[in-house]
Image 1 (cartoon, rainbow, N blue to C red):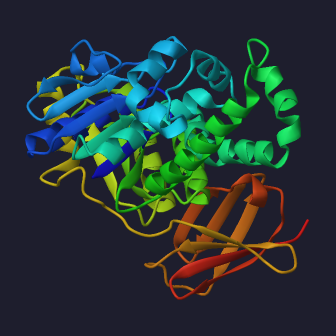
Image 2: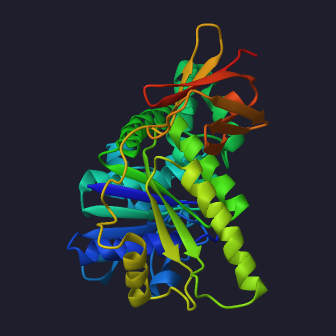
Length: 387
């Protein structure tokens, strides 16, 4: 079972890359599902086939769906009744509990993730490809298992104050708080299982789609940084819409190609050691199965796009005894003792000999001063001072 989640800034082509990946997987003989968790769905437009909230077959070995998290909560829970009711309540899920749980912080994200976990548990498909929402929403989606468990844990600790804690999120007075607490406990256990699935590198892979533009590259770096904090395995980067050398003549196209080359080099430097796949900018729309098949070939060549392309952590952050932190980054191909660091806000500029890299720091490091950096056994170690 493979779960591959594509994320990135809005408008970079996540949907087309996800659909192309799923189509190639199906063509290779794997029963494949491509699903969208984006509220502003465009998967149906990419496939040029109408889709529903449940999987429908769109080609040989290929199913697609647009997960509806904004639909009426009762209808939504109803579609997953066998799965969710067994997980939450042996006697079925009452409308009262559904109402109260639907108002719980992050429940729409949890429901989207439970869709993914449902496929992983039931193994209805060999591969599940997720066309995710824009980066910020997807990071929130992926952090919800931890956030939800924090909420549920505190409710367990302070059972007496449970009604008071839930009232601000409820549409009416709670009826049967004990039943809701039991449901939360079971949903807490389910999110723990979900967290295991999402962070298992043998099952799940995360891929950032970007274009060679500054704002897009920086957002992609932030995404990789946050995914690393939660131990979600990133296995590659897809650079989309690269202008071919033969694209147009004149100053406009020459300038655009010059800008793209600049950021293509930045991508090569800043996302090492991740494999980088590249897809061209087409003169026509990438819509329909034939166009998606061409994109899959141009991007992945003869490779199976659902293979695991990279194994290993992209960063490690350890808390030191003095209250500081140590950031470790794999740099297996860099050989030099001359490490220079410059920090500006949440940006870290690293120079090692002729190698240069710019990276976005997570918040816990961004507010601290960098001590020093050194290479050791193929790892760059950077110390951050206590506050």
